[in-house]
Image (tube, rainbow, N blue to C red; front, side, top):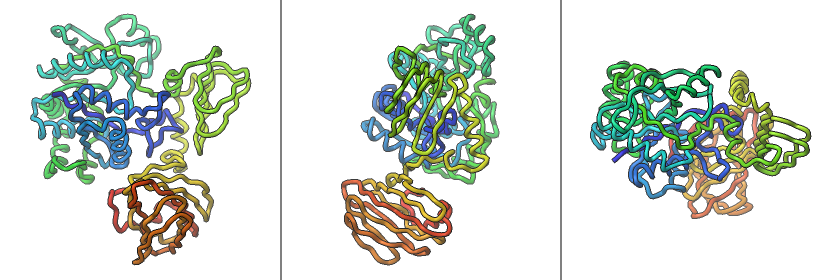
Length: 471
């Protein structure tokens, strides 16, 4: 049995303002209404024949990932390894390999794939994975290499060599992202494949390779793994020891130097959905080359992509633009410069702008909240608490709060007092008073929260008890 290992990390800054640190690319809705995370787990279960999957992600993203899995693929046995911080793919893959070795044995193969890629031809992908698994059983460190459809400067390449039986090809070299002329030569030669970041190997093979070529990562991850009970669900990696592991990709740490490397070519309609150009390609175009999502009016517009959320967007006399509208930010870019959106994020980071990390609607383990109004001394939020959801028992020292129930029935604790509030009922919470909100019913509840005070920063929060270990 092959264990699919899904790596879900990174912020997807080239897809800002939709993809942000707290709600990154795997959770974005695509043209068909599915998320990349949802599509990936369904693909993983097809590979695993509905059995076991393992996802490596952060604790911040665990609850939303789990909810998506339960919604679209409830039949599988989904396991999670939670990283306290991202350390690139090498440490994540070592942790996954150790988990597989502990549970299934070190000769067991695993298929590593990102959570935020799109594959349109599942049959072609499945066939390639079967070939890669055969090579993995023979001790090869195997990649899936995508057949190039055009000269691409945004991807790394794999130069292939001699055939290995009927399963794949030896890897001659990994090549970094080329310039356009070099990319054209690569495609014309027929010897190069796109490096899609998908791997297949046994737990033993990859652990031995890391031990040989990245000994410091191997030893550091050994210390991380010491004393861990791998049967715990979800399994959290200890923060103190994990922070000492060198951050490195599996490509640089191992694959570029290992002697027994193979690649299986695949033509499966693959895309890393790494830009707004790639997103726009998922939509049908009109006769003028325009592609839209949401309520859009176009007058004399050509080759323009517009994506909106909840309000009308009109464009007149524009060519070759990308326009992306969210609740709190709008992106306008020339199509040929859409890859440079990361520079916007870099500028926002300089001022610690909240739009780098958060949307107006923020997902939490207990539900979500939307910011309705935000000023210097007053903030209004709408809280939606899912059935069984419980906010942390917390104290604010520099601002007070006022809760009004607008739907459902809320369980409220203020100080030592516990009460049940129905629709239209309110409660005041003074600064310094411990408080908690919970939903013990079978239906979602909504509460309007008004914060007032001299300081409304997110760090004016002391958690006394927290069921989830996060907000």
